[in-house]
Length: 323
Image (cartoon, rainbow, N blue to C red):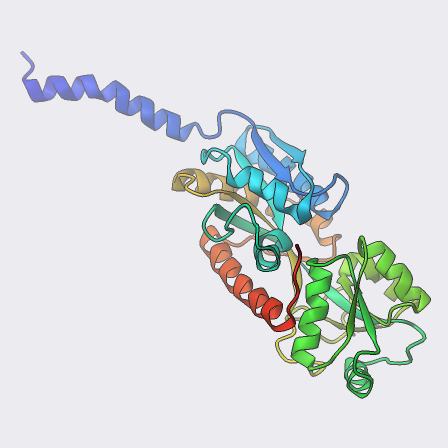
């Protein structure tokens, strides 16, 4: 005859086995990956490439859904407020996570409290360029000209709070120069006005300027990464060119809502890593002009805290606001 302890253990075994099976089965339904920008843009391209490879690794579809608006805040907020079960993630860019919260007083989420970092996917630096009629060919010459003509040179951006805007503000802060900000409705019109000489300076993501640089239409004075780019090996970094701590990159990464169970975070991270090891995915991602990162959740969380503090410093120093 079974004793009481053995009988209870036998009765509990199916329930424990069921729970273990349920945990091991994640994911057992499609995963939704929100892109907080319009379809066809860099974040959408990156999400589709990563999502396709993740689907193969995880065995369930990763469905990409565009939820644009408010500089990415609408899509990020939708994920921050979703159930923390690992079935809703966002392919966010740096703006909505580490820049917008310093510019707006009415953010619907706290990026450090309400989100679970899973992995940084890609980092895209900016090229610092000038109008072809400005006559400068080095960053040192540009800084000297700006100091000799305070407030008379203008830099363009893709809008207030964009990574291009913050790159220009960071250049002002690190180089100690006074240049005027001219916001546009996107990177393309800013590039057009740079080519026409209506603005003098533009720090734009690599894909927006690389074609014009290669064609000789505008000079590349520096890149804002820590190291030189393979696709522009002769262009110095801004730090090499004499502007200290001038590192600015638009990054893209996968995040979910806060409090996702650790085993599910690990599974999602494995899916992202599989995507970043896929040769076709790697080729498409590097064509976006950036470097593949693939950080762990812990590394990504630390990176977010670090860059959140950096851009907070820049916003406070420049007084930039977005209401």
